[in-house]
Image (cartoon, rainbow, N blue to C red; front, side, top):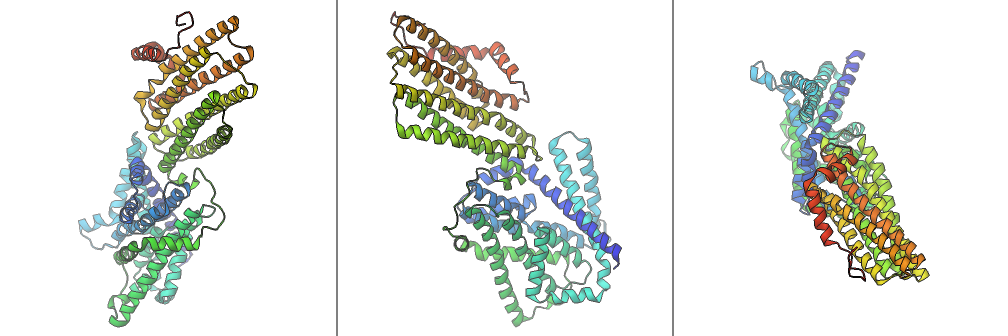
Length: 589
């Protein structure tokens, strides 16, 4: 084996890893909302968690990606540690799918069917179909399928290149002597762990071993401990991902590590004890890609069968490793680990924006109540909540900018666009809630008084403001585009009420019923309520225009007001519901 074989081997490894990477990402992207809905069905049942982890890993072809995703979920509070244990175990079984696909490369024979089933036979066909779909079809879904096929073809091409480059090793005594040393269980275990830790993919390291097995120079005795070590080495990715995360995320990474270490040690103890008694003859035979796939699957299935009932024990072991008396958890609203899975990251961003919106509504209601009755403790919480709302906007906004740089589905792109529009509106409503708080503080500190008529009118305006905020949050949290069209007519009613209240207030000033200073405070309140309704209108309009791929919001609003027949009907309906009280003269202005 000369230097050019080494170059070919490195090139084949590069193509193999690149093909695996783009195939996994394309599969993940195609899974899209289906992956999201699967994760949404997480339960406290370890068996269901196991099946979930198996399914997700089989889809995205990477146990490392699944465990990193789980670490991110735990760190963001989307998942508890006990939910993560079963998923981590399932991911170890799900990753064996790749080994079975790669084992097809070991098929031998000249028959048409055998040659067709061999990846060397069908990979070029898949590559041709893939490039046609990728380059000449407009559908994003079909382009994604084309990317998957191209990734798989590259993966198999890389494996074939590695196999060809390593073929001369079969005649090298030093190569055979090296793998003879790996028949020592501990040495083989360490080698497998180190190889997988280096390339951070157990599927890839198993593929490399399968390519080496085609030389015929590796026995089952040499391959078995390497395979066990590969399962341990894949934990490095999750451990690296957990650096700087909170205690729960680090515990999830250690659960993954302990599962594989305990599983490997138990398997080796039982297997080699049995071998001492029975002396398995197959250990001296050359290993094949199919044998490697069988060993890989049997180990992970048996380890899961033994350890799944003791999931709580693994959890307790992780708690002992990362105890509660360590430094406090970092309060991360959004975990950047999830950016590697854009669909999940979008969902997390949406949930955090919902949290921000609910906090905004709560703060607004508290500020409104302070106008009528001052409470020092409640007043203090308004300021604290406003700081939290500002932090939400900063963190979510920065996270969405990073997320926008990722390769996402059209649906996820639309969701990100809506979030970018709405977080600023929710933050501005929060600012107006603070302005209302300032007005309430001024009324309290200066002992200002408004007339009973002014307070009655204010009650109507506050009711319609609560209504439009509640409807807006319902529209946003439920993606209810039908209800979104009802926000703008209500916003028009708010504008009418504010205009009428200003006119009435000027009349009361002229009559000496209200004081000048109290009047200034009232004017400030009217401005803030009107602006809150405007921002609610912006949220609803953003959702509709983005959903319809129409980004001219003002054009949409003009069309809605002037051309939508239901607009006038709804406007009149809301106008009848929210009516200012009659004046002393018995007339409604």
